[in-house]
Image (cartoon, rainbow over all chains, first blue to last red; front, side):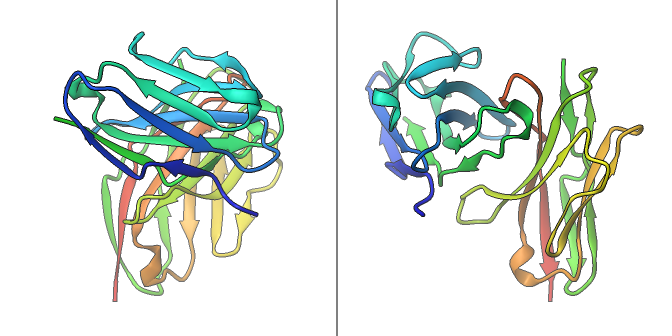
Length: 116
Length: 113
């Protein structure tokens, strides 16, 4: 069974440009999460999809970030326009059951975003 | 608000020795889950072990065990017979009914040959 995949693995862009990150969850996983780790800080939750619906987007930093999950399959996270403070590693995770705190989240390898 | 603390930024351990990584949490919710993840230098986040707040026994997965002390609100990870491949960052994470994981700062573990 394929794990969570993310694309690209690295992205280097200039301030003001747009970047789109993609996440493909484990097949059959209804729950999809985005997290971010900014240099020197803790990993922070961004948002949670259940199928194609946003369950919780309380961690999204501002309206420059837009997440979608087409047809309840893969998800994209777009940053437009990118700012210097958006640099970090963006992780995607997926889980199978909708049982809250008992649900193990499996992570992708992350996308390292550098904004110059 | 929930909070999770890992007090050891780094640890050096001799190969084949056991190692305990500390994790404490703060919550008023009766139902929650605690997770440990390993992040090697390659960057991926690997799930190791899970403990539920209502579980009567400490979780174990191979060489990993979780020393869960509910009254003290601690969930320390114990790695028995450490190996060179155990060198990595280790993160403790907490989850309640909000589903999202709240993360500790991590502990960098280095196993010495």
